Length: 109
Image (cartoon, rainbow, N blue to C red):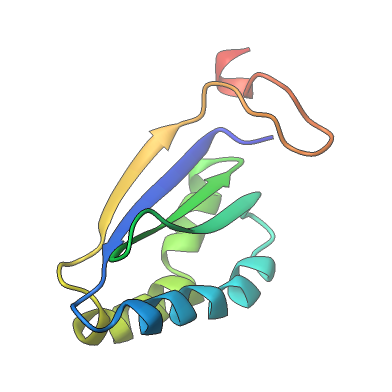
């Protein structure tokens, strides 16, 4: 079940688009190792704009993720890859369809 999520918008510096895309692919192994991360997606919105979308069962799992390996890796590479600091938005999940799911979050039940 998911109750909270994060959306992170990333804009690549000119000429760094491929490198940012490769960086995001490499972060999947970290996401797979986070038991509190229910869903994690690296996305490409256009030629220079990328993002991370993830969902968690609760705020504690979200905070653990924000202090985890992906955040650390992003912190060390942001200056060389990103045109601007990452734009991080937190949100509440109102309803979700995940494998074996289709439930209303506990916070709304």
